[in-house]
Image (cartoon, rainbow, N blue to C red):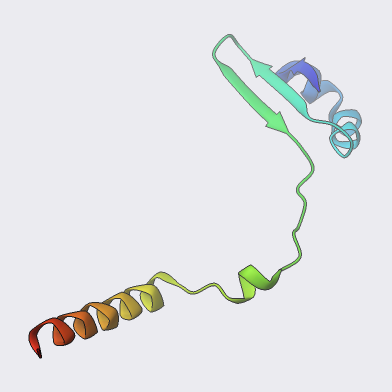
Length: 76
């Protein structure tokens, strides 16, 4: 990990973009602002992602389960 100033990044952009492939670059701007420059990595979808559902599907499933539980409780 390297810590550099924003002006150092501005003056040597190519150098730090190349370095960010291998290591994290921390950019300090002033006293209160800090940024991190890293290479973005793409993840391959795995089985968990293939089984994922959206919020709308989740809510529909929850509603179905609640209705089923209610029917069982009051049908006795």
